[in-house]
Image 1 (tube, one colour):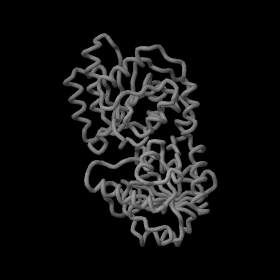
Image 2 (cartoon, helix red, strand yellow; image 1 turned 90 degrees about the horizontal axis):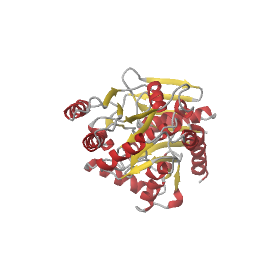
Image 3 (cartoon, rainbow, N blue to C red; image 1 turned 120 degrees about the vertical axis):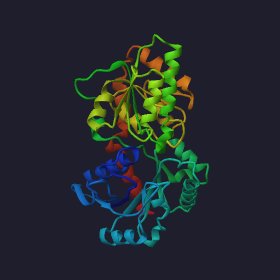
Image 4 (tube, one colour; image 1 turned 135 degrees about the vertical axis):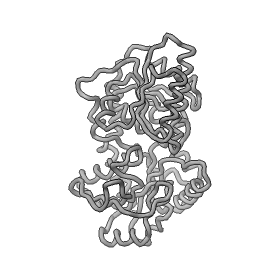
Length: 370
């Protein structure tokens, strides 16, 4: 099968979106498919690279709108004529997906991953509205990461039978399980996420407020929070932690390599995700944590809440509730280790690349056969 991917982001970009496109592309190529990825250029990376047999990534100097590369019809047509794909993969709601013409224009079907609501701005709502119109037209095979998003689309007029639930995938490093020779540090929690205004939905501010409440209401409770992430709000969060006298509790680690993340997931007594609305479309850090055996705590506001609530030992608290979040942290970190790491690792196998790629192969085959 020949797959043309129009990627909003790709490695070396960090986050759930680029992780999905990168792992899917590599997974398809590993299974013998030919994959061509188009994406934006990054600092120091431009032109065409071939990271493995069967995979070509073209880092293009093209217009960017709201962080999304704009693929012109002329560009797509040229790549279609040269590469001759069997299917085109996009993600939505996004500007690139909005600009995709009807499949018959190129004679190639396409599939899209509908993964999250956009922000509250008028342009974001316009993009989402146009995407929904297009999806109702039965132009694309549709994948979503959880039942929440399938129900969301069905409530907006898209047939349930057209929507396939396929979870996002973790990298092989995390799929291999916890780092050998590590043990969990019981009173230590871990937050991983962007600390910037574009990712304010991560609600790190809620976690800071929860830490303040724990300090006030449970002064003898001893715990520590490692924070992985960077962004334009980092200094403000550091100042907030200092003002609340949390410097002995909260450590800001900045950006982290996958090697460092692997060690942190393997030793944390808890991985916490305070995101409180569906712009957190799934929750990749929770999948990565589970694959490494770590307990997880999150709110009922994220798109993947139903999926992750079924994980062994998972705790779900009310969204936007700092007190509930803090009490969840205390409940998990105050208790003895639950001995369910192996069960969490087993649960995480559904997020391994092989399992996910097989489902995309099936989705593509159905779209091509239609």
